[in-house]
Image (cartoon, rainbow, N blue to C red; front, side):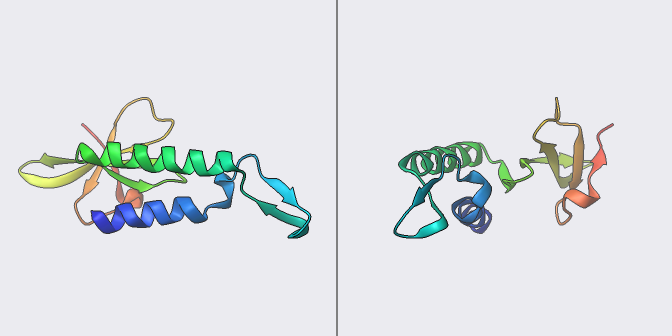
Length: 107
């Protein structure tokens, strides 16, 4: 789980879509962009939120898709409940060694 968190944090740090409010630097060239101080604040806040989510035993699987898995059991076997940003409720699950592409509806 720690490795997943570190990977998520690394993805966040290198994801250009998160660089909201970029500014141009004359020293870096006319087509270069550098993150503003606000970007650093946003990055810290997102990392803090990831840690908060994982404190409850959940796993942030994919920042870009907004995927979060919640540990659970189904018929005595460990599974992950799977939620994607934009879905109104947790309505899918997948096996412990499966991913998003194998998720199935609850029920």
